[in-house]
Length: 238
Image (cartoon, rainbow, N blue to C red; front, side, top):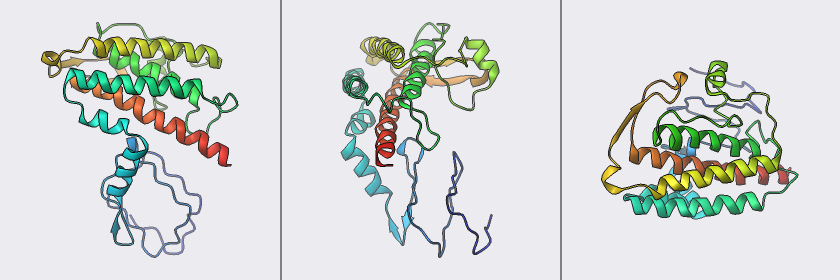
């Protein structure tokens, strides 16, 4: 698809679009931001220079926990990575500026909403995938924004809930403890065991492994903490 030359696209915002193979030729480029899903850039060439390697290296420098998660192989590795991530999150929450915890930046979740989403992610991956498979969901959990109303009803999620910061922090702390218990129970001989289930109807059948479920829990918490640090910094700059 081509855009006519001279088209004014200033301020254009593209959310969750497929831009593979896109070309910007002879364009005015200034104050352009790219936030890839989970920081996973494919090939990215700027003025003939491939820059994705630099971006990955810089993210690893700023967030070394990414490396620990990526290189985890054994149950002990996964536990060690989780211990680091758990400690980082508790410190982030304790130091969060009170005037920014409910503030959205560029339409992204606020810090309070991010914590509620991680509670939901823990309900899915620690509760249903790695647990008994039918554990109840926290009513204040926050699924992805494209989730249909039927899922809210099915899982008993409260769409109108606006919990205060103290309540959100308590929920998140309990969720971290729960996930930590899952990592503590991990065993090498079980990591490659398959898990096939339907966490909830809209999600459909999920085919994964015990190892992959642990990795998802780690990456969810690592990536959302990175966003949680990025967005208040943007809000402060503004």
